[in-house]
Image (cartoon, rainbow, N blue to C red; front, side, top):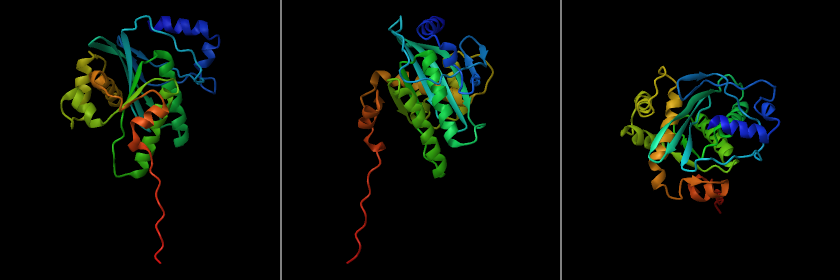
Length: 251
């Protein structure tokens, strides 16, 4: 299925090889695993406009969900294929961002890599883990920006997005809202029959987000799901900053 999509995309886009190259001409890499146990080290991301062709699926009953665990140093991602009530692993991995010096460059790379995943796998839905609230305001601000850029990559391609709290993701997968990363990883590996070596906790977190969305997708209401910026803001009014009124000077 994936190979056929790539072949169709290549026919429709003569500059296919050039599209999947970085701005410096080199392929973009990220640690990743693909279903079937084959280690993939040549993940490539596309620097392309939002007008890129989006192919139709042959099997309309099949749904691909891209789960994302936002991060400013390591961002996890995981894709699952849903057929009816059954689901299986498509691919999972992490995107290393620590090597990029500035925060702005990290945001650029996040957008490029998420766009590349969307171009390659054509997900029907993107599910993200909501940032948790910590004491370090600057860290929370940067994490929120990273999540926002990942959202923008999906919304720019008209892909619906959903957001789930870490507690809800853990509860959905393990039945314990306070489960550790290791516990989540163990359950995800069991559910998706992952036999590769342990590790990539951010990637298994992302798969957990995708599984969480699958479990809740049948019960989702309009709130929390969006197919564009306007829809997202209408569904999440609390995310809008409220203007502050200036204080009156005492007479």
